[in-house]
Image 1 (tube, rainbow over the protein chains, first blue to last red):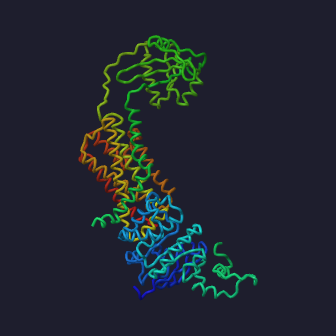
Image 2 (cartoon, rainbow over the protein chains, first blue to last red):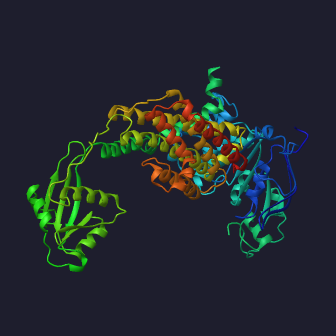
Image 3 (cartoon, rainbow over the protein chains, first blue to last red):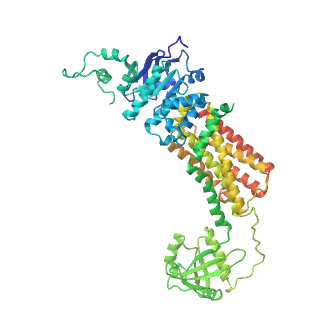
Length: 254
Length: 381
């Protein structure tokens, strides 16, 4: 398992009817790396993650997880992956704990780990609250808790903080930073918040219109900027948004 | 060991589905209370003897001679012999009422209002009149829609009362023997139908809608991204529904037994087997219905499109034998008809495996075919 990169994406293409969502992407993610897929809405981030997740099949190209394709290894790979999707609604009238317990049963996870996760995502006080009564941030933390239940080697998070207020976002980041410190998990996170990518990830991949525009560490990416398209008197630090604007002429959140 | 059983995915899925159900007050009301109220309402409405009110417009003559209203000789004689009561109705108009009591057939109250022909036609169209009566040269004229059973009945009763030769009705040969023994009342017809309908509605909504809703909320997709076995998910969902169907049907039957004295006259084992086969076929229909769509609105439409025709045609509330002859064979082939007819024959006619074995088998096999087809097309995300 250790000889292979955690995730290898080789020249992957995917279309939905007339729309080419992913137009030839290569990406290799080593163990323990936190990768951000940064791009505006409709860039192809979610499609790429869904293919890595094994939910969508690429039209062309290949995706290997720990050197194995999805086909024929589904059961094995599902145990190694944790994920949190955009806008998953759990069952309204189950409590936080019951929801966690349901998902724990799919991985044969015992009591100790369930309690540990409840604690990690800060929902002990809400263990008896129905999911329907949780706030947006609490629901996302529950989704994250479910994603990390099985101590996944790969964590796939699709816009985990979209729609959350800054406090709730910060809480999610704190949980993820703790996980990162453990060095056991590789993560792909899609986001259109550059701050999120900057805070959490070692490696940033900028995607637009189904292609990778640029990739590298934050410093590499920003150093590669020839000149900030701002006034000379502007002394602020260059950001990924500046880079994106430089590359595409548009803003990330457009 | 206990922890292993308690942590089994199938049990946890079963618990999740059942918790979701029982925590929704609407489920208890629509699944349990509503069918009971319906059986009570319809059972009482059709079982108790009540007064039948027939409303008759009295016009001076036929349409060609609409003029000053006047009852006419035969009717005036009837008013006298039958002691008609003159009183004001709720609209303040004068009406004459004749009460004809019958120990066996119930009481009929004839309400006569004098009016002009045009006015009578308006009321007839509104459905507030059963019949229009007039006399020409001493002969009664009855105007009514012969296709309307209520009007026809009013005509038969009234013409018998007035007679053709005089006010006294001719005595008829034969006698009426009212049947009120268990098994022949309307409620005996209704309860098996309601039980069958309950299985259909509950399976379609409980299986189909539950799946479509979970798909639309991306919960199905989230679940299949774990090592959860898909068969466990469906098995748990269907078992919870079957269990609920048994509870709902059991409570409805208990109620009907306590209030109306309904019993199972045939084989209880055959009843259970047929009921289980009914659950199976509707679970199969439910899976097929829910196999593709992720839109709850589409699911809603599909479920209604499947359940409405069966509810109307399958003889849940009234016998389907009033439908055209050519359609009966098709109606009988509908799963709801098979289930309702089978349950009815066991409960009221005393049937057993010999009579319902084949329908039960047909339902079970149909269920299996639909279930398999549904699974072939099933989209988890």
